[in-house]
Structure formats: C-alpha cells, structure tokens
Length: 238
Image 1 (tube, rainbow, N blue to C red):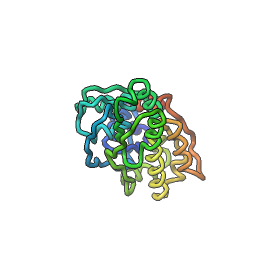
Image 2: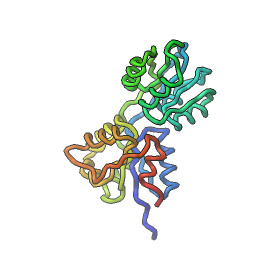
Image 3: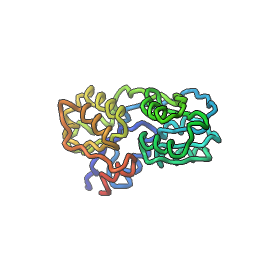
Image 4: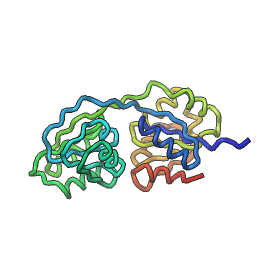
C-alpha cells in the first residue's frame, strides 16, 4: 500500500484555504485545513473617490463592482477584483509598502480622496503612509475577521500523529497568531515545533516565531515574494 503524502497545514481563512488546498494537492502534498480566521463581509457604502485601494482578495470579494479605478495590493487581489466585475484594475508588487508606492506614482493627491477598503483592524499603517504622501484617505471596513473557535477535528487528528504533517503555511501575522493560539489550546504546541513554518513575508515569519515561543520551529522559511506562488515554491512538487 502506497503511503500517504506528507501533510501541510493550511491556516488561511476560507475561501482561500480551499484554493490553497487544491494547489498543494496538485503539487503532490496532502493539505490539512485549519483556517485560523473566519471572514464575514460588512455593509459597505461606496463614497466618491479617485481610486479604490484593495489590500486583499477578501476585500475584493466583499465589495460591489464599481467604475472607480482600482489599485490592488498584488496580482492575486487584482485577479479577484477583475473576476468580481471591477473594470479598471492595476496591481502593485504584493505588499502595503508597494501599494503606497504605486499610489504615489500613479495618482495625484489633488484629484480627490483615496478609498481604502480593508478588514476590520487592518490598514491603519497604510492609511498613515498615504496621508504622509499628501493623500486624503477614506478608510472603510469591508469585512470582519474573527478568530476561529477551534481547530477542525480532522486537523487535530492529523497533528496528533508525529510526522504526518511536516509544514505549516502562514499568510498573515494575525492568522499566524490565531493559529498558534488554537494549536496551543489543543495541546499541540510541542508537536508543531517539529515542523517547518513557511511564511509569505518576513513580518509573517516574525509573528509565527513569536507565537510559538518559548518553543522554536524546526525551520522558518520565507517566500521570495509576498504571494502564494512564491510561498508554495518553498515546498515545490513532490
């Protein structure tokens, strides 16, 4: 009987977790779903603005299409916005700093405010960066992200068997923190310490490292770019 492929824990929220699971399976890995956050759209009124800035795919999914030009944080968010019916979409290089730089290059502070659509608790730093560049920023909450109440039973069962899950994917600092809280609450902190932590950015890697303390990961690796393709490239095909 052929042994099952090594498992990889997916901590990002749905619906993104399912997409990541498909990508992992196509690479020959066995996805183990453990979303750390639960996303829910919030009521959203679209004020007048010269451009809409989207910091995540979740924000793009939460808003009605508009004719306002869109600046997306990266290609994945831009693709989501186009799929949702946004007509004029431009992508930055993948993180908040790149989004602010793109706005400064392509937009005029005198042409009107920027509408920044974010998750609850997110985007304050980006808004401050844009305001420091002379823009007026309207920051609006597009969705809420609350911590999951518990790990899925299937994930707990997998993690209780040493060696079945070899790596954990982390997509954001908050999901890393919430995931580790759930794992520790389930008595699994020492188990995951024997795994690799794969982070989409240095900031996420730092959050995952702090959240596991005083234990340490077997290894921490960071994607070359802040996107899913680069994160999955850390694993590669089996």
